[in-house]
Image 1: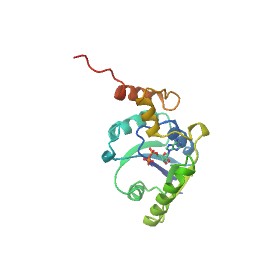
Image 2: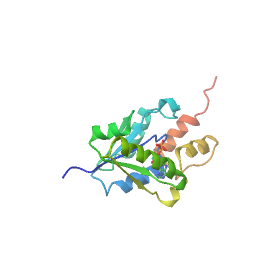
Image 3: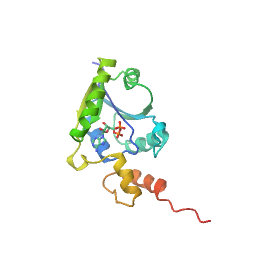
Image 4: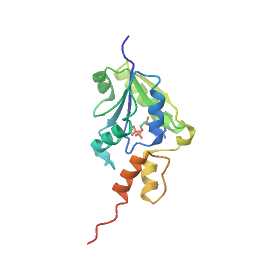
Length: 166
Ligand code: ADP
């Protein structure tokens, strides 16, 4: 039987505990999980794609059958390259549904072999987004418990480093 490979695509700028929760839910279901970091430099990310890949690699070090890659272009083409048939997306609330529904159906049209499955995170993370983490942190708010410690350290370095003394 061929390997069940799932691709979990996203910006992950930065990865937070809601993302990790989804990855952990994938592990017992699939033989292999590829976390696919979207190259979206046009969106002016806080962390470059190389930084995001390195950050996620470090976080997933102890998780078996999990790897991190970056991609650009059509997700369905990346799926073909990886010989993967399942896209995993997280569903936080009904507000995610409309966009996700459109994407899933477009991807199915582009490649009918690709199925999208939706997983729901633990309720504690259902309001969490990378945008909110960045916004709250940059305004001085506490995001402990919402992002892994490594990400918290990186946020400190990137956003709260004291200005160099002149
Ligand atoms: P994108 O830019 O594709 O929306 P994100 O990095 O924001 O990428 O999210 C990647 C995936 O993780 C998406 O499927 C998104 O719905 C899901 N996701 C984001 N935040 C959460 C969360 N708090 N809980 C569960 N899934 C989430």
